[in-house]
Image (cartoon, rainbow, N blue to C red; front, side, top):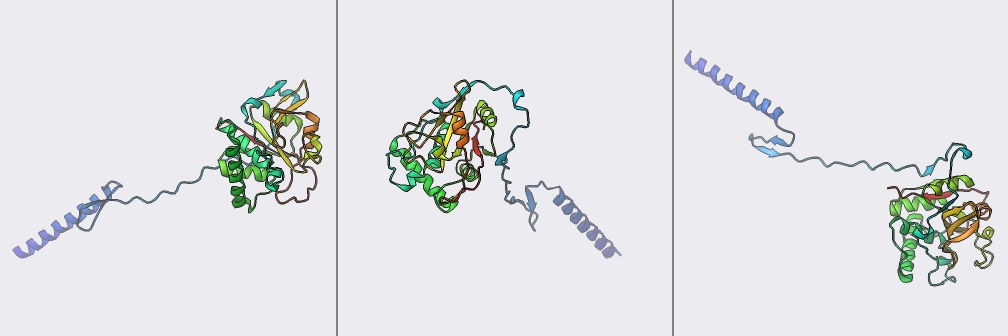
Length: 269
């Protein structure tokens, strides 16, 4: 009888110990676990995978407000803040890559503006243009003519800047965007710019940067990389606007229709 009572008592003790261990297991802090010997061991945290931050839409919507209801200043210019880059810094116009380097030069101008940096030396600028040639080969498969949308994609990927595309812009759209302190890269039919500094009548595909405007003089202020005289170059409003024409990404692909798409860069980040 005594032996039976002892057996019952032992079973009760063992059961109590087991219940206590289970209770302690569940009450153990998240970062502590118990091994089979009841010794506390640090818990190995699972690797956390961060979700990429969603970027703003590449193509933005234009304002729906009536133009006459929005007040814009008569004169906007920040050209002194936007460094000028000549697409052929050493006048290597015989090099086909530099003949078509208006996109790269325009990208560099906006990059220097974004980081508040002056135009570096001619040698450094050439090196940076060459680096963009190589980066574009990886991004596009070659360094070539790039559309407004693809140029914006490249800027967003390469520099991580808040860049966007506005499609089918009106003159008022351009005034409004510039009045907000932004700069604009525009693809153009360079022949329609009638720039006397261009040779051969001008390039069929050409990008430049608009840095401001003057309503009274009816002028856009630009940095045009296609000429060494392109710093703060003034184009009549109707001339530049009529020349705006997006083109396909590729090697001199046929241009069909007129798409007035432009690239907008904001500095509010």
